[in-house]
Image (cartoon, rainbow, N blue to C red; front, side, top):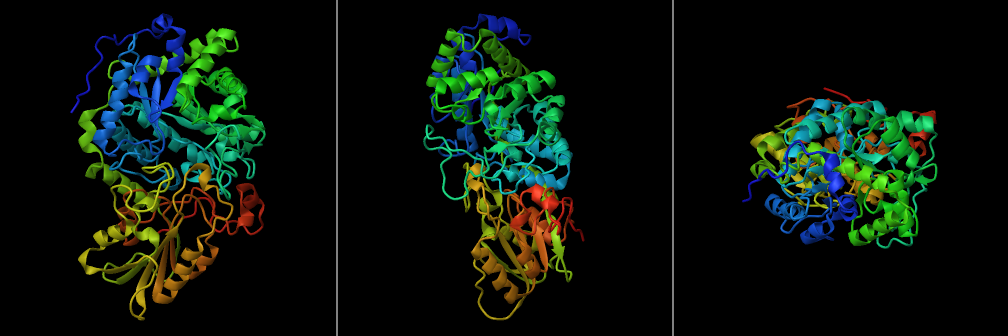
Length: 595
């Protein structure tokens, strides 16, 4: 096993300016380049002076273990140290709810659930565990937190936002940034997606015939994700910019730009918001990174796209595939005067300052001593606590909850024994998946652990149990299949027909019915609410669903409060329609029962 060694040849008081002055144009543009690991061999990091490498969703080694992650990432760190100036690479990943690409890592509830806790200290503890498991693999750069303020729950990224209300988003986003960047170990947080990604309008997403294999999907997919926000500037600032103001004040040193547009202008080409507002008005001193291949969307002509993005204020480009073309294109743009040398120098100094602050000049590698802690009982205990605090009790009649540990309980629903479903998207793979995708505890397993030997718990995914006698208690676990980004855009928001039928079947099979909903957003449950004696919003709890069982059986109380309003019908979507509707929401922001 490798042991991380400090880079003693680089003095700790290194001058960014003096280093930048030694750099050639090729070395500077290399630092501005971020390539995806499946597209770049380590030796090309050395050849092209590449400043950053990333694993996208599912960008995992085979086999997918913490040890193979550490080995894979170390190869890129070592390659960077073979360059003339030995400028370290920073390796990035979407550790949006734990280091969730890595099998065996602890996966926390998605942000929508963390928003229901209203607990910045809990967010800090989750961020600390995430940073430890990232650094065990040598990953210094986390593309999180999302501080989106989703205004339309049809959006497939709703679960990445803590809340529809910026006053809830701000303290939780700040807590995540501060712990990642000030904790031990230290990692670089990327605050995203700048700005108003949560304010786009349904039906405004675009497709790009010059970009093959991306953003082309059937049905409602990409109907709002990456679309256009038409809010006026006052709304943009009060709702969507507010979390960035707070994050910058808290010391954020990386901002990721949104795929979306504001008033018809692609954010990646919006010099006013990136340079004038973020870097100028807010005094942001870190570096700005693009999103995945987002620069390509600006214009059919790639050189125009690159030139527009860099001149708008993008400092590092998540290319992610053809890094040679990007480097060639930007080099030609500088040589022709389309991009100034001053703009390049500013971008590089920003990147180098962050690398110096991050400590990678002195300690470029990960922390092999942390490998043993990945997925540890201590880390899982933090996630289990987080799950308990995210749960929101929507209904509880006839003293249905807490459940008795001595009762006959019939459990039904595919979500009851499906770790992949309870984790959602951004879990091992980009879109997530059903089944035992990683190590963890399903809700069914958790119920059996928490109830112990005294309980009789039967399970049938489809609710088909032997015999005709009614059970005292039925628990149905229903909800959304995993999805991510625009693939999750959904204009329906109802439970599947199979889930609806299952609730009806179980209603007839038991005296008291508990419905547990796994979802990345509020969904339309008005009919099922009437059929249930108790209903719980569990959101996307991650790998530690014993936490759900802890609360169902009354070992811990319900404390979660909704961070989004829940509509009665699709006519109350988006949030502007709900606020104008005379019937009001099914459940308002802040709702949550206790017992």
